[in-house]
Amino acid sequence: MNADRTSQIEDRRSFYPADITYTQLIARNKRNSNVLVGVMGLLVVAVACAIGAMVSIYGTGVIRPQAVVMSIAVGLMVAVASTMFSYYAGAATILSISGAREIQKSDDPQLFNVVEELSIAGGIPMPMVYVMDSPALNAFATGRDPKNAAVAITTGLRAKLTRDELAGVIAHELSHIRHYDIRLTMLMATLAGLIVLAADMAWRIAFYGGGFGSGGGGRRRSSNSEGGGAAVVIVMVIAVLLMIVAPLLAKLIQLAVSRQREYLADAGAVELTRYPQGLADALRKLAGDDTPLETANKATGHLFIDNPFLQARGESDWDSAFSTHPPIHERIARLEALMR
Amino acid sequence: MFPTLITLGVIVLIVLFLVATYNALVAKRIQTENAWAQIDVQLKRRYDLIPNLVETVKGYAAHEKQTLEAVIKARQTAIDASNVRDQAAAENMLTGALRQIFALSESYPNLKANENFMQLQEELGSTENKISYARQFFNDTVSQFNTAVQKFPSNLIAGMFGFKNKDFFEIEVPEQREAVKVKF
Image 1: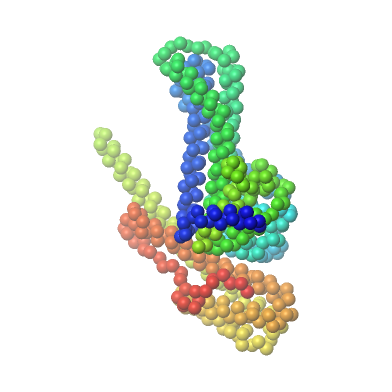
Image 2 (image 1 turned 120 degrees about the horizontal axis):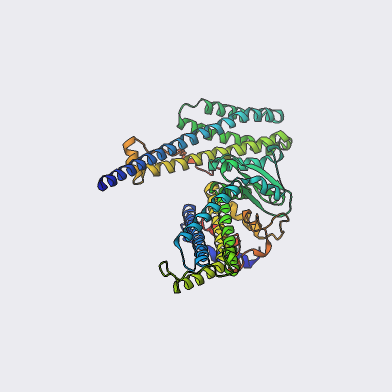
């Protein structure tokens, strides 16, 4: 690894208190991701309110509370339905997209043993073990809960790691399973998708009246009893701004949550192995490698232990905001801070 | 009318809290019992692997009688141990004895290269790790249980229903506090 990267790790390591423990890291990361999920929820509500307002304005010229409540209710119903659908879609889809094949103990006893050992440490049933034939260095976990989970690793990574490093990587993936990160990711994707859908719908309403009445107007009642006039204009402006900004905001929140959960999985890996060096060494090996993973695509990228898309290794801050994974030097620094 | 409803509501909430906390304590205690049983599962696994190891080694290093006998004896002592303390001590003796056997292989290259031996090396090494991790997990569950027993307000319910702190699994002999992960 180059000197530049090493000095980055050194700098970041001194950022953490000397006596920091993995328990503290876990608590901090869980708090952060809860806040982010809360913000996402608020965003969904805000968007639903805005749609309700817009619909009622275009339909009747005033903002009717009933319309706002209705659209929140409809939004929630759609959210629940689509979340449940993706919840049961299962691990099988992702595994087949990635070209992974299941292996038995006899195919690779050491890998099997490592997965079994760490499942015991975590008190979870042992997940299914998959292997991807690829020279790229990556691994991922999938499954809606520990009982229906699978862990996969590329042949490239499997060959390069020592037993301790392998334990670190597998522990990181098992932590994703233990923390129900896959479920959380599905939830966030559904919410974000809803927001994008809603924003799109809102544009239609704004420009074409959405078929609710004659183009852009409908029946405008001039009654003041339900708050017309200037208030309507202000609300419209806010609603339109929200529609422009919401999809971007949703994406940013989604990515921020993804990064927090990666840090959480790193800390969880230490909780399992009690050996931060193992994962730190594995990450150092990952940091030095440049091979892209052929079968990764946007839908599955965030599940991998390291961002499979080379361009987004999170070198600058701007890049970091759009990356599903935290910068590797930061992850290594955090792990090594635990070793002091 | 209204005050009565409020009082009733408060009572219901208190009862719900009591029930939820009691159930949580029970669940955590059962976790510790399950985790303890899991340690035994791994220990028994090791007992089952050892005869195979002894037979394989005999084939190549029959005159290393002392080392082989040490392992067989240590295994039997561990199986016969009646209480936790004796068992922990016996298990650590067994780890030491096994280490001797795998050290043997350095002097017997044919043994070292033997497929069966290499497999046993991986299996026994893995079993050692599993025993460590099972103990680690047991301690984690005990930690969670004890925290619930001592933290307010669940400590009130714990006191009421007789939930007591559990002991951690600890190695009592100082020499045996070395690195617990074994690499043969």
